[in-house]
Length: 253
Ligand SMILES: Nc1ncnc2c1ncn2[C@@H]1O[C@H](COP(=O)(O)OP(=O)(O)OP(=O)(O)O)[C@@H](O)[C@H]1O
Image 1 (cartoon, helix red, strand yellow):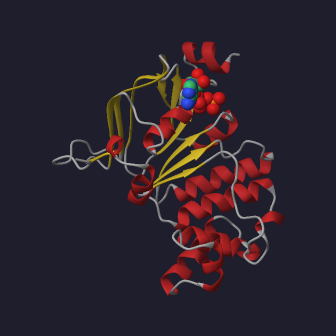
Image 2 (tube, rainbow, N blue to C red; image 1 turned 180 degrees about the horizontal axis):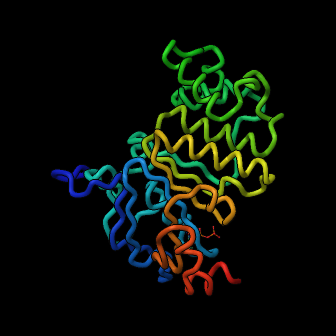
């Protein structure tokens, strides 16, 4: 059964006592974490801390050996496959942008909106009025309105990341998982990405994994530091970055 009887938590995302091992190695070790609806959370932690594996668990790519993973208080994500989880409204942006370089920005968004259609089909399918309006809004959010007819391949690295975030937004998810969005960006792009995510967070719940502490500070949200597959510290950026264990295993290196 994928839907539990009655709501057990107000959290949009609820992980409790989650364990994952790969050939006996405990990548996720008694991980518990909750995200309230409308929240944005920054996840930090050293390489190998389990950040990617945690996102893999939420999106159904990896199944935990033990523990609870609930979406919207009711749905047991451990019982669902990746497609079903995406349909529920969990969108994931991987670190490397994967836009369709030889298509225009607008067509990339149409493709995302129209996930069941082929590239060729989409080029002849322009969507209905509501969808066109949604695309206009997404273009505005990702600051690419004036570039809508340009080929995605001509965008800067930062703009490609924004386009990919836009492709997620076109699908109108409830929860966005964003993996290292500012890696390789200029300082200006990094700042603009923080602004962009803050704007998106007015309507969506967001989890963002990032190593760039200037960016994390700029987000101004609650921070969770993972280490060895579990939560090492949680709180404001000042609380987490002054935590001695966090300095020892991550920041002070
Ligand atoms: N499929 C797998 N098979 C074996 N070990 C794995 C697998 N996936 C992850 N691991 C191991 O689990 C641990 C957690 O990895 P994970 O990629 O989740 O860390 P991370 O916090 O995302 O690190 P990074 O910041 O480098 O991306 C690492 O030691 C990794 O080698």
